[in-house]
Amino acid sequence: MKKEKTNVMRILDQYKINYNSYDYSNSSAISGMEVASELGEDPNRVFKTLVTIAKSKEYYVFLVPVNSELDLKKAAVSVNEKNIEMIKAKDLLPLTGYIHGGCSPIGTKKKFKTVIDASAGNYETIIFSGGKIGYQVEVRLTDLKKVIDFSLKDIKINNI
Image 1 (cartoon, one colour):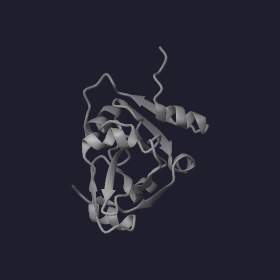
Image 2 (cartoon, one colour):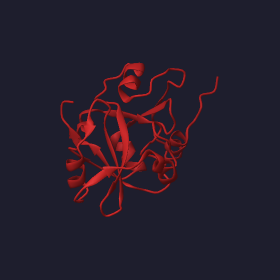
Image 3 (cartoon, rainbow, N blue to C red):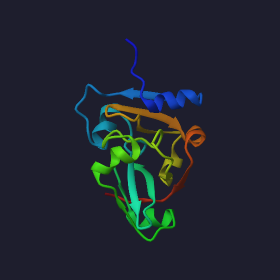
Protein backbone atom coordinates (compact mmCIF):
# COMPACT_ATOMS: atom_id res chain seq x y z
CA MET A 1 0.00 0.00 0.00
CA LYS A 2 1.40 3.38 -1.00
CA LYS A 3 1.96 5.77 1.86
CA GLU A 4 0.11 9.05 1.61
CA LYS A 5 2.41 12.04 1.10
CA THR A 6 1.53 15.36 2.65
CA ASN A 7 2.68 18.68 1.28
CA VAL A 8 5.29 18.81 4.07
CA MET A 9 6.74 15.47 2.92
CA ARG A 10 6.82 16.63 -0.71
CA ILE A 11 8.73 19.77 0.36
CA LEU A 12 11.22 17.65 2.35
CA ASP A 13 11.62 15.40 -0.72
CA GLN A 14 12.23 18.48 -2.88
CA TYR A 15 15.09 19.50 -0.59
CA LYS A 16 16.35 15.88 -0.64
CA ILE A 17 16.06 15.68 3.14
CA ASN A 18 15.92 12.36 4.97
CA TYR A 19 12.96 12.14 7.31
CA ASN A 20 10.72 9.58 8.93
CA SER A 21 6.99 9.95 8.54
CA TYR A 22 4.35 8.61 10.88
CA ASP A 23 0.76 7.92 9.95
CA TYR A 24 -1.55 7.61 12.93
CA SER A 25 -4.64 8.69 10.97
CA ASN A 26 -6.45 5.48 12.02
CA SER A 27 -6.12 6.35 15.71
CA SER A 28 -8.22 8.71 17.80
CA ALA A 29 -5.12 10.59 19.04
CA ILE A 30 -5.78 14.33 18.92
CA SER A 31 -3.79 16.11 21.63
CA GLY A 32 -0.02 16.28 21.40
CA MET A 33 0.37 13.99 24.40
CA GLU A 34 -1.97 11.42 22.78
CA VAL A 35 0.07 11.63 19.57
CA ALA A 36 3.38 11.10 21.44
CA SER A 37 1.81 8.13 23.23
CA GLU A 38 0.40 6.69 19.97
CA LEU A 39 3.86 6.96 18.37
CA GLY A 40 5.55 5.55 21.49
CA GLU A 41 7.79 8.62 21.59
CA ASP A 42 9.19 10.82 24.35
CA PRO A 43 6.78 13.82 24.55
CA ASN A 44 9.84 16.08 25.01
CA ARG A 45 10.84 15.21 21.43
CA VAL A 46 7.38 15.64 19.87
CA PHE A 47 6.63 19.29 19.13
CA LYS A 48 3.41 21.19 18.55
CA THR A 49 3.25 24.15 16.16
CA LEU A 50 1.67 27.32 17.51
CA VAL A 51 0.88 30.44 15.47
CA THR A 52 0.75 33.82 17.17
CA ILE A 53 0.20 37.47 16.38
CA ALA A 54 2.10 40.32 17.96
CA LYS A 55 0.92 43.81 18.81
CA SER A 56 2.89 44.90 15.71
CA LYS A 57 0.49 42.70 13.64
CA GLU A 58 3.41 40.41 12.69
CA TYR A 59 2.77 36.67 12.83
CA TYR A 60 5.19 34.21 14.40
CA VAL A 61 5.40 30.41 14.56
CA PHE A 62 6.61 28.68 17.72
CA LEU A 63 7.33 25.01 18.36
CA VAL A 64 7.26 23.65 21.89
CA PRO A 65 7.24 20.07 23.22
CA VAL A 66 3.71 18.64 23.43
CA ASN A 67 4.03 18.24 27.21
CA SER A 68 4.65 21.95 27.76
CA GLU A 69 3.03 25.29 27.03
CA LEU A 70 4.31 28.33 25.19
CA ASP A 71 5.39 31.08 27.57
CA LEU A 72 3.95 34.13 25.80
CA LYS A 73 6.33 36.52 27.59
CA LYS A 74 9.45 34.51 26.68
CA ALA A 75 8.11 34.05 23.14
CA ALA A 76 7.56 37.81 22.74
CA VAL A 77 11.09 38.53 23.98
CA SER A 78 12.50 35.91 21.59
CA VAL A 79 11.15 37.86 18.58
CA ASN A 80 11.69 41.38 20.02
CA GLU A 81 8.00 42.09 20.51
CA LYS A 82 6.24 43.68 23.48
CA ASN A 83 3.56 41.00 23.57
CA ILE A 84 2.05 38.24 21.48
CA GLU A 85 -1.08 36.16 21.65
CA MET A 86 -2.34 32.99 20.01
CA ILE A 87 -4.26 33.59 16.78
CA LYS A 88 -7.88 32.54 16.66
CA ALA A 89 -8.46 29.01 15.30
CA LYS A 90 -10.65 30.41 12.48
CA ASP A 91 -7.70 32.55 11.27
CA LEU A 92 -5.29 29.61 11.02
CA LEU A 93 -6.40 28.13 7.68
CA PRO A 94 -6.56 31.41 5.68
CA LEU A 95 -3.20 32.49 7.17
CA THR A 96 -1.17 29.28 6.97
CA GLY A 97 -3.11 26.92 4.72
CA TYR A 98 -3.32 24.45 7.63
CA ILE A 99 -6.15 23.48 9.94
CA HIS A 100 -5.94 23.32 13.73
CA GLY A 101 -4.23 20.07 14.69
CA GLY A 102 -2.45 19.77 11.35
CA CYS A 103 -0.31 22.92 11.32
CA SER A 104 3.35 22.46 10.40
CA PRO A 105 6.18 25.01 10.34
CA ILE A 106 6.99 23.72 6.82
CA GLY A 107 4.88 24.75 3.85
CA THR A 108 2.90 27.65 5.30
CA LYS A 109 1.39 30.03 2.74
CA LYS A 110 3.91 32.73 3.75
CA LYS A 111 7.24 32.41 5.50
CA PHE A 112 6.95 33.32 9.18
CA LYS A 113 9.72 33.94 11.67
CA THR A 114 9.93 30.63 13.54
CA VAL A 115 11.31 29.89 17.00
CA ILE A 116 11.75 26.35 18.31
CA ASP A 117 12.16 25.75 22.03
CA ALA A 118 15.84 25.36 22.93
CA SER A 119 15.14 21.88 24.36
CA ALA A 120 14.98 20.63 20.74
CA GLY A 121 18.76 20.96 20.72
CA ASN A 122 18.94 18.03 23.15
CA TYR A 123 17.78 15.62 20.45
CA GLU A 124 19.25 14.44 17.18
CA THR A 125 15.79 14.64 15.60
CA ILE A 126 12.46 16.19 16.54
CA ILE A 127 8.95 15.16 15.51
CA PHE A 128 6.25 17.62 14.47
CA SER A 129 3.13 17.85 12.32
CA GLY A 130 3.33 16.53 8.80
CA GLY A 131 0.82 19.18 7.75
CA LYS A 132 -2.29 17.07 8.11
CA ILE A 133 -4.10 15.62 11.10
CA GLY A 134 -2.84 12.06 11.59
CA TYR A 135 0.64 12.65 10.16
CA GLN A 136 3.95 13.57 11.80
CA VAL A 137 7.46 13.90 10.40
CA GLU A 138 10.78 13.39 12.16
CA VAL A 139 13.64 15.58 10.96
CA ARG A 140 17.14 16.54 12.09
CA LEU A 141 17.36 20.20 13.13
CA THR A 142 20.33 20.67 10.79
CA ASP A 143 18.17 19.47 7.88
CA LEU A 144 15.16 21.52 8.98
CA LYS A 145 17.41 24.59 8.77
CA LYS A 146 17.68 23.98 5.00
CA VAL A 147 13.90 24.28 4.62
CA ILE A 148 12.86 26.96 7.12
CA ASP A 149 14.74 29.65 8.96
CA PHE A 150 14.38 29.28 12.72
CA SER A 151 16.14 30.04 15.96
CA LEU A 152 16.34 28.02 19.16
CA LYS A 153 15.26 29.93 22.27
CA ASP A 154 13.88 29.14 25.70
CA ILE A 155 10.17 29.76 25.07
CA LYS A 156 8.27 27.19 27.11
CA ILE A 157 6.70 27.28 30.54
CA ASN A 158 8.62 24.76 32.55
CA ASN A 159 7.00 21.86 34.39
CA ILE A 160 3.35 21.96 33.48
